[in-house]
Image 1: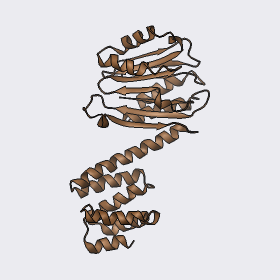
Image 2: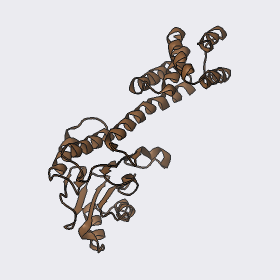
Image 3: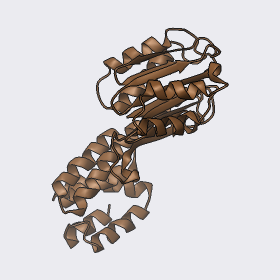
Image 4: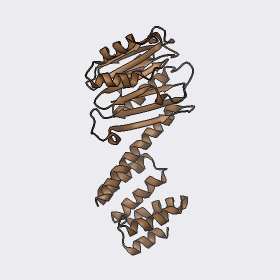
Length: 284
């Protein structure tokens, strides 16, 4: 499950999106009352339908006319509220398993464009939500412009380990083009997911799998010296030292400390080449 948002407001990701495994997702917008987030999640966690949860919270809210709120539960039930006092253009569309909503837009076509992009985009949830935000921007977006954005994705059910339940948590708090930066950060995250998988494989001695993962990371983010370095390590550990040398050279030229780290990794058995090959690597 997830939520994504862009706004001409500082650090929108700290107030609008809320998500909890086993409960659902809330987006609280317009003249935002953050209390809709935790209160809505509590109700959905107790099995209350989003439509009922939202109706009860709106009924208690004296500022309901200027609120815009959407909720989706773990079964895909969705509900949204756009108060009559929300600044035009404002509106929402709910569908199976999703809601899109916007206020203070330049054009009224934004929600429909968002819904279409979300439905039609293939791939993982974060990429689909990012496509919806890009579609909103293509329709004119926020009449004020843009400043910040956020992508938040959590597991449907809790593992009991909160650090594993939050799958994507990316925020751009202040930028002239936050969606471009958010897309870049998402690509970096995908690269580092391969890095993490490579580290796991390396730790269990599966050097072939580690190389596959490090190489995948390098293809996504070739300018990152950390990724280039571990790809070099993967190649060396797989017996392809000659192929590793240009990569070692590249990172050593950027930062000589990588050379010292190489020696330390060799000492701990994380680089498995023989002594002569280590000398070749360190001489790069």
